[in-house]
Amino acid sequence: MLDYYKLGQIVNRYANVALQKNTANFIIAKHVKAENFGWKHHDELMKEFYNLRKLLDEGKIALKDLKKPEFSLLDLKIKLTEKTMKSCNLCERKCGVNRLLGEVGVCKVGNNSLISSEFIHMGEEYYISPSHTIFFMGCNFFCQFCQNWSISQWFERGFYVAEEKLAKLIEERRRFSLNVNFVGGEPTPNLLFILKTLKHCSVNIPIIWNSNFYMSKNTMKILDGIVDMYLSDFKFGNDYCAERLSKVKSYFKICSRNHLIAAKNGEITIRHLVLPNHINCCSKPILKWIAKNLKDKAIVNIMSQYMPQYKAKNYPEINRTVSHEEMKEVIEYAETLELNYIT
Ligand code: SF4
Image (cartoon, rainbow, N blue to C red; front, side, top):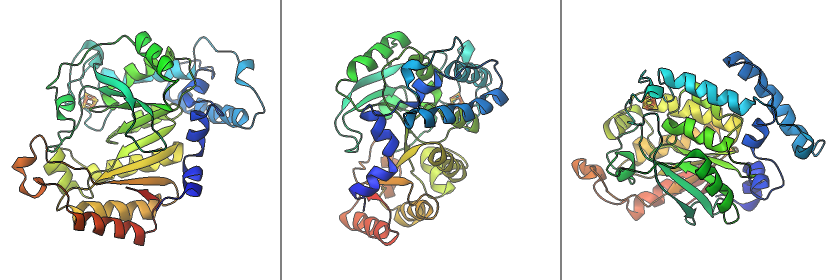
């Protein structure tokens, strides 16, 4: 079970940014000068980014004394995202379509991002609420039980908000929110729009990346130095269940790889929605993997609120809510593993 001491350790920097004691990653990225458009240059600049962040965190330099370069690490990340979208491999679907020309792949997000809603969310984990949550249209998964199916599968039309306008909204809502929380659907196909929005945003606010964690390695690199807290949705403990219920391949290898990268680059909360009849194949293997790889680095939210929605009725084993006995079994297992979990 998570105690306050562990919470403070695991999400220390996020909390400091939320309380305005430290500077958000994307603001620091705006102060690192970039000179060309290459990946190699990007990787070198990331070392500079972390050196600068350390000096700022230790109070050895002040942000107000730094000049903003004409072309920054954030601008370079925008260019690299555009490059990645020309033959889109923002996620491991690797559709190869030219998103900049408006072509669409599996996620059906073209060259414009659309928003379903944005509001101050009071029901997220207690240490991130109130959270300014922005729901993007479209998803790279086809979860048959999706709790947000009208957004992820385009049953809604969504609406367009210019990046400058969304940045202003983030600035205004900062008075009432601890963070800005990019979700969907899935934020990954909307990465370019998110980065361009942050370019226009000057308020110090932690960035939360609320995702299914099917990002490509390129996307993981771009997120490094932008995201302050990763909020993952670790659903399946094996590839068979992932392919059957979310129509996605190589799930466990990709999702676990990205968890390791995210925990190295930032702070992480892992959400696991317990599915009925998936305790031994999914819940337990996931918790076991976390205990082995990220025990003291991650907070695990074991979620019981599953409802059979969307196409769940076609899969008899998930066509009901989770039983009290199932939740008890999962929580007792998390206890045995000594995880830092909340429910
Ligand atoms: S972001 Fe969309 S278009 Fe790009 S690879 Fe993923 S599913 Fe395909």
